[in-house]
Length: 174
Image (tube, rainbow, N blue to C red; front, side, top):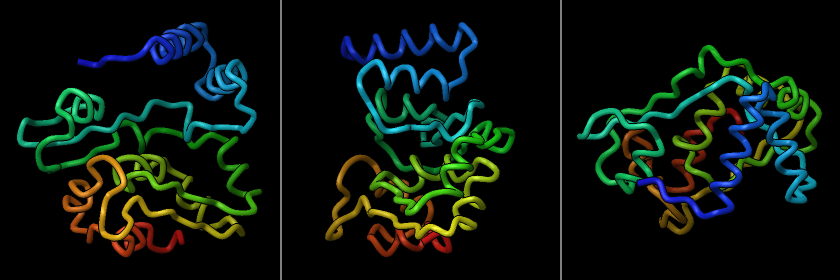
């Protein structure tokens, strides 16, 4: 049920190999990005595991099961970021936030994509404490979701499915 192209599969296999050798997720991602010529520094929120789980009428599903196998069908009835409370924010991420000139939250699903990052202790506070302005790009334009099940997640959180609803979700961060 989880079909990957050759490049995606190779990326996953190489990532798994590096992690099994003891490299951290941060070091692994840096090596993989360098191998494909990505010059920007891309950092994971933590070197600890955090897994997103979604509850629907079918019960609790991993995020991949919900998105890929179930095609994001059904109402979102619950959302958990398992491991987030025990995870430590990456020191690289905290330093990047403290030294940022601007923090831009991309137009991802606020609840499914950004909330797991903010759930890791220290990241939300580091963003609030940063002297940099924090800007969010809405994944909802003209009342239309750009991609994915954002509307289902916004409804679950009792947020208006609009750019204003996204701003309400981020609140003091912006």
